[in-house]
Structures are given as C-alpha cells and as structure tokens.
Length: 342
Image (cartoon, rainbow, N blue to C red; front, side):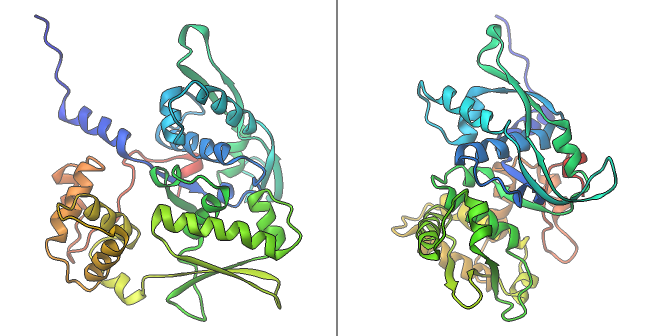
C-alpha cells in the first residue's frame, strides 16, 4: 500500500495561512479612485485579485474559478462563470485615479485614466482556471502612493449593496482621522458630487442620496454590527458621516492592537459555548468588559484566534508579545513590494 507523504509542519502552516488570511492592504489610490460606475461584483473582484497579487507579487496569475467564486460570495450554480466574466470585463475599462506620484516621470499626477486588467484568458485544456494579467501601467502609477486601508475580505464579500460596501470602506479608510471637535468621534464630510462619484449615481437632490445611504448604513450594521450615522447639513451642503471611536485612553490600555478588538470579540462570540439569544448585544457587553479589563482569560482566547484562524505557531505568537505585556499587530510574513510597500 502506498503511503501519502506527510506534510511538514512548516508547509502545512503556510498552506493554512493562505487559506485563512483574508486581509487586504488596499492602496489608498484605489480606495479613493473614482470607480463608482463599476458594479459591486467588479469592485469585489478587484479586491480579490489585489489580494492574490499582494501575496504572490506577480502581475500574471492563475486563479481557479471556484476560488474566485468563493472570494466574491457567489452561489455555486451554472451562472457564476458568466457573472465573473462580466465583472472582469468591467475591470478592463478605464477609471480615474487621483493625487499620486508617477514613478516613471517623477511628476505629481492630478488625475489619470487607466484600466486595472490588461487581459484575461481561459484555455480549453484547463477551463477551471483563468489567467489574469494586471496592467503594468496600473501598478506603476501606484508605487509611490502613500497610505493603505486594511479590509477583511471575508467580511466585505457579505455586502449585497454598493452603498453598504463603499460606505464601510470609507469608514475603514477614515476611522482614525483626527477630529478637533470631538476626539471620541470619527467624522468625514462629502458633497453630493463626491458621493455620486463614489457610488456611480447621478442624484441631484440630497434626499435621494440619503435614501441610498440609509440602506447602506442599515446593511453595515447588519453585516458588521458597526453603527455609522449620517445627516445632510444644508448650510455646508455636505453629507456628514460619524462614528464612535475607541477613546485614546482605552486604546493605550488595550492589551491587543485596537484594529483587532472587534475581530477578537467576534471570535469569542462565535466560539462561545454559552447559549446566546442576542449576539450583537452580547458582543457589545464583552467589548465593554474587555476594554475595562474585566474579561477573564482573554489572552488564551486571543492566542487561540491567532493560532486557529491565522495559523500562527506558539513561537510566532510569543514573539508578538512585547515587554509591556501588550501584543503588537501582525501582518503577512512575506515582504511586500511595489504596490504594497511601506
């Protein structure tokens, strides 16, 4: 009887990380791009392809259609291949990027029209795979752009509306933006033209835009549990978005990275053996207890999340713990280059 060759611990570890790491560090030139005319599916496809590029650092890649389907949150039926082709076709169309440095000329660019994909192919002998080529010009445009937005694709793929998807991305983008009026609140202001550019709409009246925003905010709360508020200020003619931020004092005291707190609480709720009727209320209470240092045995749960969700070894987790007892944030181990350089 032939025995299968056992996987080494290191290879199994790397494979597990590839399967479970759904974090995308999205270059803000793309986050801020005027690409609202793209469908929601095309936006998700762009993020999924960027994540693969982030991991492999190759502009030419081969993806299984079934894997891309899962990343996009599509159902497994006969129509999903045609839907994916439609999304990828959209990504060959040009859209506008703004405010970055051109690595070739060294000049500051006000705006540029470029497409994300150069071409996509499927060969007859391997129709379950697609060959994707990212436009070299697109990547060159973004080399010098500073700033990234961290997006959990396992969360973002759950959105069914463009308003929810784009507003949540904006929330992640500007979450920590300083607010002189109230440090405990995050605030961002956008006029109706900026909103139309973001969503691909042509609304002339604030009331119509608020209807879409309202649907998006409701979906964000349903999907993520995050409360974001918005109203239209007639004097400035701006849509005012606001959200509660973790106070600076609590951020300083948190034993884990503040960016991981909500994810950690969700992990605790998901793996709780206790029967919970209202998970959102339970999560809110756990978060309050954690920030007040009243949550017992939190460390074993956090280490469990790092080990079983992200497949870090005990030694790697130990290395994350600093001398002051706090844990530093983690990221992909492979050094990122080009588009994802610091």
